[in-house]
Length: 590
Image (tube, rainbow, N blue to C red; front, side, top):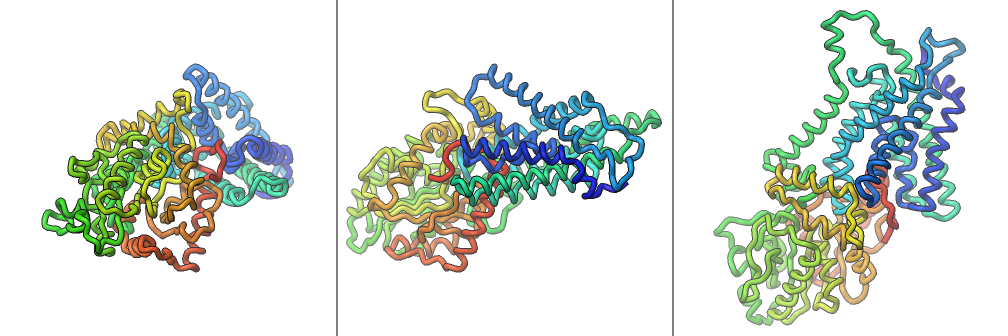
């Protein structure tokens, strides 16, 4: 028996349903949520992929538990019905002009319940991944997505034959089933990357629908290939008792669970420092698999380092006493898990004579100096973070009588947004955003205080991953909740205020393209992409000179050819990744 393309094109009804379903959802999302069009073709994808598609939609709406339960049941039944229809339409009744074997098409009832069991199992196993995706939508940075992607793909591969083969739960997936799922994953990612470059005008909409139709055609071909695999594998009718016991073991679910355990184990090794990522050596890596922890700034030097003590917290010794040679006053705001007050040492070294003071997440002492804090002091609500940052900007301005430049990294950029929104008119000269959190609060709490059901799952993940990490079970609960409530408004206000007297430089690591909005980077020369992971840029030898030039009043001067290449790569990665993030129901581009 051959699984040929000629046989596939005789399944016109399969092509019509698979492509038509993808086009229908793409058209509906074009009207209601254009930024979510990237996920539309997954509505008719293979069972494991479509289960993940549905699970993320379940996480997007604010609803009570009873309503959530009813929606889950309705979606579960609808998904099982759709998978049953696609499988029966895909069954290879005829190939190369002859009938296939003697195996009849499976009954609708058996296929329906098998697909229902697969969808339910996939939802349970993939719920941590969907929770990570939800966390990334609240607090967009790449480390949680980097952790979620291999978990998601590994589980999908383990379940690639689910719902289709006889007793699929006690089989490992055949190579052909794995191959068809990988091909579908690649096609859906490519379709999302193309769709991300299209606007919502009539011509672009038609092109987006065409892309969805093409992806739906690939879905149909994958269904046909997987049905051919099922037709080849006859159930075993005569096996010994030991073999029957062995074959009853749930190999597929176990393999999916082992994927999760493996990635969590690697994350724990990274938390403890056993595994380090090259390229982030200047940072304390604190976050693979954790939506709660952002990479810290540079490590504190030893006690004998000239940047420790009161002088390090104040900049040069004479600066705060009115030394007229001081040219700049810089407040450095490190990211999550950082300690005060040595994160500005590297910047101080390349800008001699400059007052460099580090922001303290705890506050100021009576003499106006930042209070030293450990790596567990930065889980504070966003409004409080903005207020403390404003107070320390004013204190540094009072001490130096100069406008204050702010260099903020990761979580610190959230504080900048809050500070500028809540305290207009501050004496801020320039702002440098390193590994900025772009468009936070894409989903989250509502202004009325009603929290969506998935936020419960996010709280549970906060406790679980926080317990694994060095930061304790509290994780970043206060920060996450406040970002969901205020983050989007603060960020939007910051975007609208750009160009109103404050100079800006944003340095975006290429890894963070995984979580950037799928709308392209602004053409401004003050938005620079660097080949790096999220966090640790405060101590990066390639980034520091760029920041120093900018703070000295010059252009960042990133190489143009290299920037063009990195920008194109970032936009391509962002578009492809949109297929596997949370569907974005808010406007795509600020």
